[in-house]
Image (spheres, rainbow over the protein chains, first blue to last red):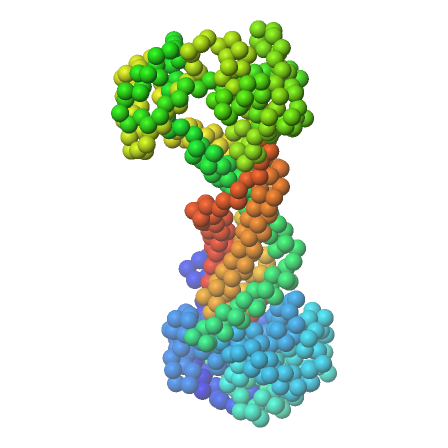
Length: 237
Length: 378
């Protein structure tokens, strides 16, 4: 479903503080599976997710989504693909304060021009699934960490994307809430959605909900109980 | 089309919610901006109304007034001048006028005395301007006495108070008969203050003025359009003075509005990043902020303009009245006829809405083109 070939990503290119976050990644990600990227801070996990999720473009190399090369597309087309095909769950949740849970959830639907009533119905169904209906009119800053995360999940689902991208989804959650999140993940795969997440939380990467773990380091390395795939990344140093 | 409309509706919904979320900032901005529009619109409306009032009043005045000059100063018209004018083609009617100034020590004010034909004002009676009547507490039927410059006391019966419709020009006016005028000021017989001329064809007014200058080389023709232009200049000048006096305050408000409008808080930048990451296009973000700017600036414009309209036409521009009407002991009291000039509104609209939109747009555009992946790195 998603193919990466010879992906490199540099920040501050040409400047004294130039930094290569990814340096030659070759990877194929299957549809309908949960793939976890594991590795220490600075290993390029988040950068990889931003490239796959059309949030940024690689410095070199190709990203193919369902056979289409998306690495060179102009921003407008990338946004269109991102809106239709990807749902994001951010580490800090990134909800908009001052708005209610419901208002936050329907935000990604605005640029699609779907009628408000239709968006609200869809949001309420998702709230129902996530057992959050009772909090839908509460402002997001009044919600607990777990509730905020479920709002972020609902927002990621509102446009019914094929791929869910979650960056360190359990970093701000306690064990119980992390388990709850993994249960929700299983629901996604049951619906045929593809999930890509980054985590260094053993509870996540060792969970049965995760089908594949990719170790990310400056040198090729990985070890898990599952069939392991290491990113073929070479150190620039 | 429906999708486009629905999108705009969503953007406006979100904009309204955003405005409500930042109440303090937006209310402050709205207030500063509305005050700015209020000051500018009050000035513009008031001076425009005065100009209209002056044109309205002067519409009935003679096309040409002829004054005689001696050593560059205004002097009396000697006998025989009116007859000479009668021979100039194009002049429909000519009338010698008698008028002068009188200082009344009772109210420390100057009055304008003007002679009218006997069929209008009977001998021994006067008609007075509404402002003067108020200042001296006069009403029709009262008797008032003035001591002339020669020291003699003259008593007049007030036959009427002039209509307040033309109070702008008749505020300090005293109309009396020709005989009374000549007796009061000891005006030499056959002499006049100036001559009023009627010219039937407006196209001929300048030509008549040229002929007058040739026939009577020691005279100065004053055209109605010139008087009108002088009035306009006086009002423009006063508007200019007012603007200069208020320049500091206006600038302060303008800077405050600009600062508030153009400064994007870290929270707003973060929100723009989130919106982009969840699928909003750069153009959606800019459009949303445009709606925000438009809603604020239009509301402020309407509030400021309506407040200015009420201030000028219902409260007589109480704030700017002393400067704009002029300095005088006898202030004319008159209700301005509400006149709104489309071009004036358009100019004001352009100079208030446009800079605001520009102020909003540049920082928004900068924030909106940042890469959406910044949200993942926050």
